[in-house]
Image 1 (cartoon, rainbow, N blue to C red):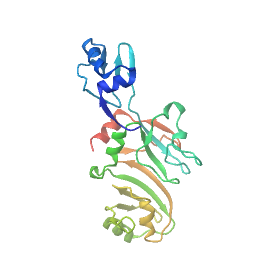
Image 2: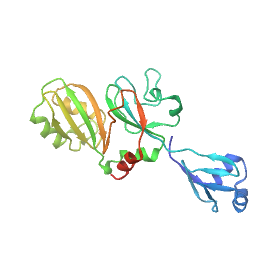
Image 3: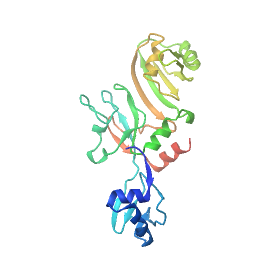
Image 4: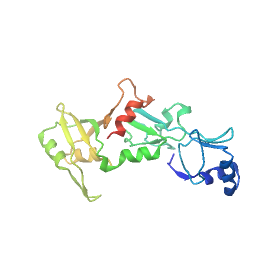
Length: 237
């Protein structure tokens, strides 16, 4: 669901069918409340999550929702798909309405996926200037060596986009497993970077987004709401 803002008079006129000029009379009679407070300004901004009532009739009471999912492989990071199961399909029916994905994962990638109905929140998470690191565990087909660490840290030029990737921190955990930390998400970026070494990525798992780590108790396909502390930790970045 996209974020939006509109004037109070426009909002009330559209929702109860009165003329915008008559909304002033409703306010004068103290019949309108916004977020529990009697409204006095017809130009007051009404956002996606403003609670608006006229008399006893609630016109809007949408609450922001933030979920984490342990995305399984073979599921599309999309709200709709004619041919494949989507991450939205994995949610309980009561949770699905209005949600979108804040930072997709590829079809066969797994791990931490964030979903929300707050468009402003998801856009802020993706802003390059916020430098929010995403941490991944990667398994590859061929043996890793120190040349990878230096090449990833230097960045790689992607001719198609005409850009050089930001430095990526790579830690070799074993011969075929590495942990990566990067602050951007170019198209198939990790697979393309390993592709420079002609090394196939066999599995890609997202462990964390900034300070937010995947709940180890979530099985693949399961989800839960973010806690207040988790939301606060992201807001502090």
